[in-house]
Image 1 (tube, rainbow, N blue to C red):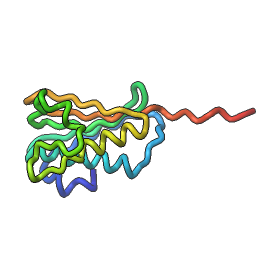
Image 2 (image 1 turned 180 degrees about the horizontal axis):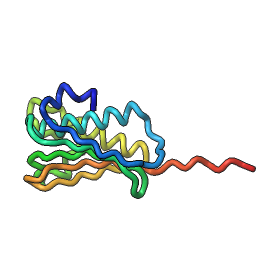
Image 3 (image 1 turned 90 degrees about the horizontal axis):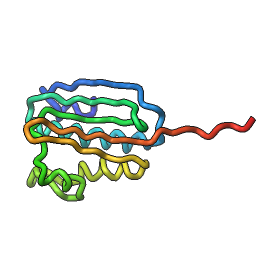
Image 4 (image 1 turned 135 degrees about the horizontal axis):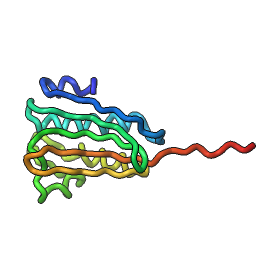
Length: 137
């Protein structure tokens, strides 16, 4: 979140941090994914609204970035993970969500996108719990 503050400006950021179980993910990739989701949320909010970052445990570990923006039209929701698909015109590369999607896939997880026009968007990354092998007696 600190890395993203210059882009977030006056947008309110709420944290709701749970206790996810341990996972095996590459920390730098995780930071990149979260920053991409925060930047997308900030763009959708256009300087006003709230972004909530949550973590928790259910069927593994998850982290979510949700916003109170305009939401994603249903006809393009499935296209968002496609490389180079953007709704930002010349301002977007269409690589933010595909990077997040690839990160979750590489680490055995999944990306869920929920949105309803007029009710914001929620991007949740799920990862399997890491259970170290039992040590021999």
